[in-house]
Length: 283
Image (cartoon, rainbow, N blue to C red):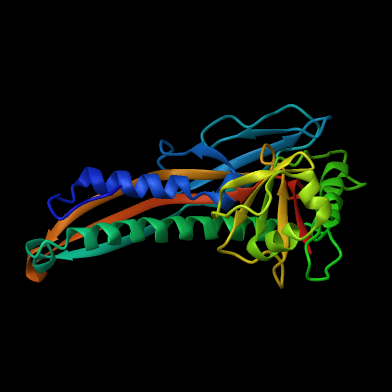
């Protein structure tokens, strides 16, 4: 959203810029389905999960009746919301000297910093799920080169599921780190299997499909101990991003500093429901 020295940074500009950038740069947040928890009047959200004969859960939110059918009591666990916040200061001198373009860039930088923080939280939730799940912890040959064969092995593992669990998953998203993507670009099997080619990569953009799974490239995080990795995820089953307070902006003056402060904040949480619904592919 371009702005010139003749413009004024309005509340609408700040809000629209922050919301646009935060909601565009999802990357790891794409792995989670969304729950609007804005009306629960609590800093926590409780899940009740009961598996039926087909291994499908019943998920009931806070304040709703827990399922009563079945021989076993439903599993109950609670997630807590965290508040994410950033701010910038616009001084009287900057406003009087016509430095609005610089301050507009600072608003954009604030929004990108918020987007990166939220994505890192989602990334941490995914890696926690991987670490808690011995079956889908790691797939691939661990030779520091991500190959098409590594990806296929991960897809097979996720679709097959653990032998002791009557449940399987269908990957519908692959997130690959930049080192892994560079590896794949030199893999003839990969290039024959996708039309992504060697086009310019923007972090978080859908690049194409491989083995029928859409994939995105992330340039912000390293997947696996040494990078050259990817996550394969069944997003319909894996987990949830819960929003207690949606992205909000406010402005206020600090007369003693002769400055105007812009804040952006939200309250969110991420949790994995089925830890088996993600595989880490370690190249």
